[in-house]
Image (cartoon, rainbow, N blue to C red):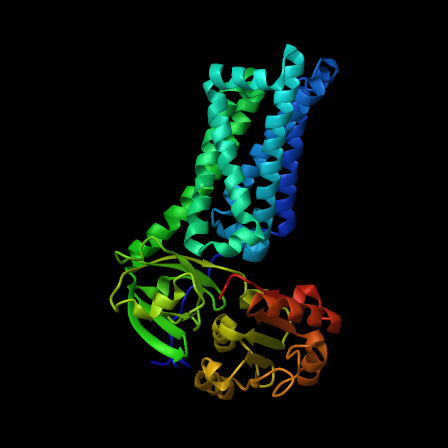
Length: 457
């Protein structure tokens, strides 16, 4: 089965353009954070500083408020809201989510320690005696500690060394516990939070924050995928080997000409069989959406991706998405260079098929270790002839068949001398992308013209 090119694909709608900029999101989040601090001041926190242990108690209150706020932001960031995806992008959202998670743990931990110390000073007894009193006399404290323990667990599993030891499924299901941690924090805040017990306006504000966060998660993380899959009834149509360890999955369903997606985007796939329904993986479209089927090309890299070739034809598929901003919507220059390494060719191949351009305006640089590792060689050559594109295959051993750094600034400039005046799309293994991004910055490619994602292949 081949997909390059389809002569008369059905028209496919484009995803909605939300028109929200990163600065809009930052202003909203900073503004709400400032309002939370002002409410803390309004509730007399500064007046407590002179009381015994007041400094610790006041800091504990502020740390709790800001830690809870960061937890809600995390909840929204992991909620797959398309307006956030468009404004910030999956890479930056993942980075922000990770560091906000560490911030949440430190703030909530600071709240626990500082409040305990402040109360023990105020009550004139030891920290241990104060802790025993709180645990035995106030049930909501146990809820709060349980929620804090969940946040600590999430923080530990998000450390890079621990993350690399976890499968995608284990990491995913551990992070589902964030919902429980936030629920426990909410119960704690309801019963003892200064905002809830003394100020009706603040109570309404915090309840509104929780409701907005919950609504965004319910609508975009759960509601939208359920509606999409009920509408299209998706199933595996075919499995096609592309190269050693590389398989393309063709998915078909009803009314795919109504499924809004762009080349370069990815979906999260879940095969609804007895042994794999609980596993979900992000895979890029490796062919431009055509209204007939969707194609995802997968390399056996672990996290059960090696089992993809064993999925029976006809298996029902549950899709979440589309996600990602590695699309033609980011293009700002007439000329485009596409750079791919390894299985990163998947979204790049779809872009080569769909990007508009006159002959000579599209260039592809494709790195592979051996000729056998070149995925879509026939399709790429056909597309290049069809589109008037130029392809440079950088294949072989470094320092022997290709330069020691195949995507060094010198090599890129030799192949594409005017690349600084072009849009550049980049996808591949993380190390390759880091080195290539550094080379492109050295050449002088503006960051606004560099489009890359690390979670789309």
